[in-house]
Structure formats: structure tokens, C-alpha cells
Length: 140
Picture 1 (tube, rainbow, N blue to C red):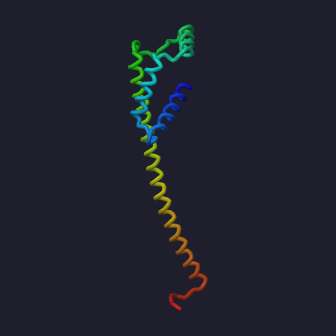
Picture 2 (cartoon, helix red, strand yellow):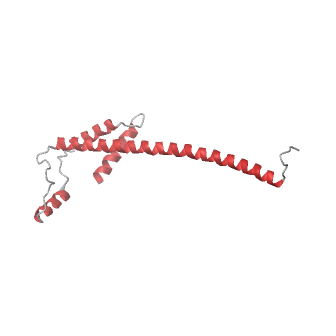
Picture 3 (cartoon, one colour):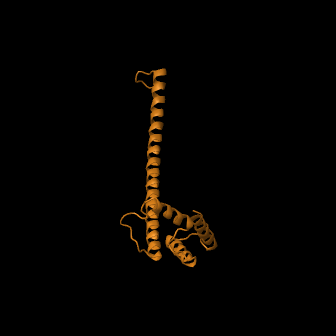
């Protein structure tokens, strides 16, 4: 988790240095891949993961899901991970578009309701005026 937080903070810090302050998804992915290569990331999750895998084997549980690829290179693993992240980003963007569309429709609906309420209040006021001072259809 701290690795993710560190990489997120690094990306924010780097984007703050650029002129516009905005980074594209491709730019962020490229920087993350460069950082992984520079840090010598080999696809392993560290000692905690290795300890959990050893405990699983000792308890007779398989270390990988059935059908999982056994000989995945770190580069392939990273590219698969990046594709998954890109797919998640795409889903989030679609969800945000759906929320925005819902908000726009909701705003239009409430505007129509306010208009109808205003018309109803006006006709109600006229009805009350008529009931208070009836004219039997004659103007005064």
C-alpha cells in the first residue's frame, strides 16, 4: 500500500512541476513503468507475500489459482497490470459520465416541477380570490 501511495505522490509531485499541471493517462503509465524498471521491480511482492505463500503451501493450499500461467515474465505481468488499470480507469470515466447525465436530467426535472408549482400557486391564488369576492362572471 505504501508503494501505491508513494507512486501516487510522486506522480502528483511530477505533474505539479509541469507547465499545465495535467498529465495524461499514457504519460502517467509511462512514468510508472520507468519507475518500476529503475527500481528493479521483478514481479515479486516482497517478504510478506513470500511468507504467506509458504504458509499456504504448508497448509496444503495451492499457491496459484488453477489455470494461472506459471512462467510470466515481470514485463508481461506489468503490461497486464497496466491494461487492467486502464480498463478500471475507463469504467470510472464511464461511471462519472453516467452520474453527470443523471444530474443533468434531475436538474431539468426539478426545473419543470418548479415551473408547475409556480403555475399551480398562481391558479390557486386566483381561485381563492374568486371565492372570497364572487362576481358571478361579471367584471366590476
